[in-house]
Image (tube, rainbow, N blue to C red):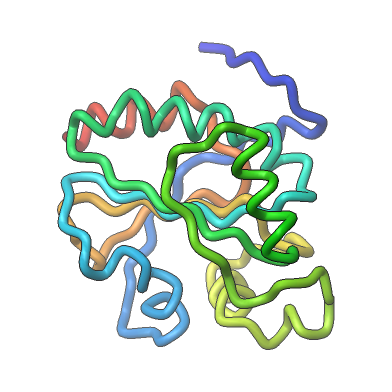
Length: 166
């Protein structure tokens, strides 16, 4: 099944399952979901200046609207940009998904190297410069096995994945 994309890069990446050990970097990253109990949890790392994130935000919002009735919880973490720019991105795209801010409020390559997000990405061989968009998918609070998407997801693939795991 093909997908229509308005984005610049259109680099759809498949869902990859990883086994999570008690690594501090991933536990820190998943902290926004820690007290939330739902059937499906998605945590998406985005940045307001990222072309792939701009392309992905409408699909992400549509998935949120379509699956929240199936006990989906979603959070966006805005990273690598000033808070005002991130808030403007959320507002301009009319996003109702709850969001928070990441570790870095600027696009600084050296400071990026010290973030937990960067450290975690290296453990899963994500060699993209900034690593956004990046999505975590968790079913039934089973943090031991997490789905990750290192880039833009294919809308049809993620919906099929949800239906198989609901």
